[in-house]
Length: 338
Image (tube, rainbow, N blue to C red; front, side):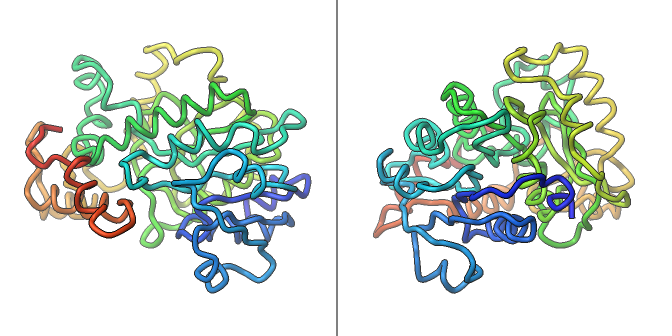
């Protein structure tokens, strides 16, 4: 619904990661909004089985393709939505490779709106915070994904974001909080900055926002976090919220503004206890409320959490015989502190 409201022009949009769960929702939202879709896919047969017939599929392996192959695959596209992630066989995050080697020059940027919209993640800056900042903002620094940070993936996504900013391509970076494909209703996309957002993001709301910012001049050159505020309808336009955000070129938010955003957003946490430090990876706010989960702040990850994190990373691992096992050992050192 939001993408339909925000769309003011029809584009031909290239989508990476189009056969993934989020990518498929993005494709659906694009088509409903009247756009054409060029899906960049590694497996053409899989794409044909899961994507609508109206989608033009072009085979491209982002782990090995060069810049010229990327330009050829994106030929005719006006915009690019980057939903892909994962690792190459050498252990490089595809996001980093893509933003440094593939995206620059792939889309001919015209106008004042974003040419590239990157799906990133909330929390990408938090592992690099100093101890004082982590302590001050403990409600968003002492949470499962930040504590475990499997494979250092958050820092790698942060690196990919910065590569896009430095590419010269008009862009927008969207950082969702915990993504929910079920169990959390659609609602109002809540935009913030400072990387202090924690909570749940409905996957359809995310997809519609990724599509909605394509035609928004106020989104260009900006990075923001996103979660779903349940119980509220989507706005008629993203423009007012986007216009309130600071451009990345202005530099980091003042720490006083970060603190103010943190204090506000902590009131929007799901559940009754509203204390994300009590969560364990793979557990819910409702389990905290019921007393089933009661982690002590500062406690090290449990073996179960390490196993869950390792499984999540394995799902993004390298392809090929024997490559995945070695990759996981390099990326996820279970004995290392997080």
